[in-house]
Length: 288
Ligand SMILES: Nc1ncnc2c1ncn2[C@@H]1O[C@H](COP(=O)(O)OP(=O)(O)O)[C@@H](O)[C@H]1O
Ligand SMILES: [Mg+2]
Image (cartoon, rainbow, N blue to C red; front, top):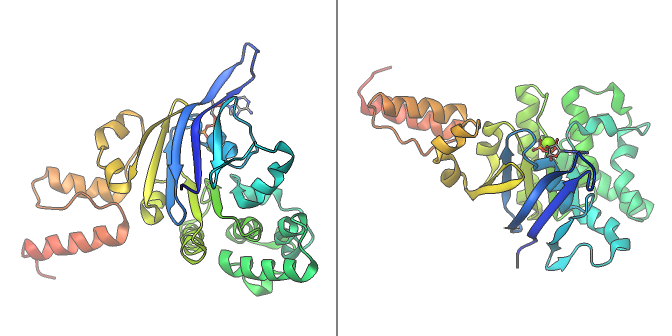
């Protein structure tokens, strides 16, 4: 059974107004525990709306969202419990930090879940490690931290609820390269150690290539592709026509191929691309 599944889900903003807009249109998809799925698509294609449907922040106009086989809207009063199981980290989540200390901020979700002090503490300590928040930051105000640190505190706040599904909407937006790498590593480690399903919405194809197993592509409120990283990225021309790019390293490998070099273009992440270029250089007999 898929961990989470949508069946013909449709969502509209501004229903029965002149502004009515279908943001998600008849979308059916299944996601399994333990995988990391990247969600890509042009601005306005419906990515943020889609992920909010998965944790019950928005309710479908039609269709169903199933979590472990059960319709999340079966008991609307219980929708809060769904939000604990399906953790959503919004874009720029650090704007929502508000407690006096990082420790209290990370503990906000677990306290809401009704855990006792000891359990909250345990959850906070665990999540701080998972998200890479250093112990010396825990008693500080979130406002004293760097951008990358704030972002990790916000992510820890969602990890602290121990979600089976962790969704992150543009988690690396606005971060410098080092902070970006750290955030991605933490997300991957969360998936590996907990077996959770991770959904990663990102504009950066490099982020997607670095940690995702599969990719879902949205365009104009619909899902138009869903497959492994290789299956999706090898449809270069279609992605390009949609205004989506490829990871930079794949563009380099493609150019080498077009220039006649015997290079493998089914490579999308930086370490594998470096290894392939080294192989090519050796094969072509260029000495150091
Ligand atoms: N709160 C809202 N009210 C009205 N329209 C919205 C709202 N949020 C998003 N939309 C519209 O829904 C569509 C999908 O938006 P969104 O889900 O934010 O896409 P993405 O995250 O891919 O950029 C867009 O046309 C957007 O303008
Ligand atoms: Mg968005």
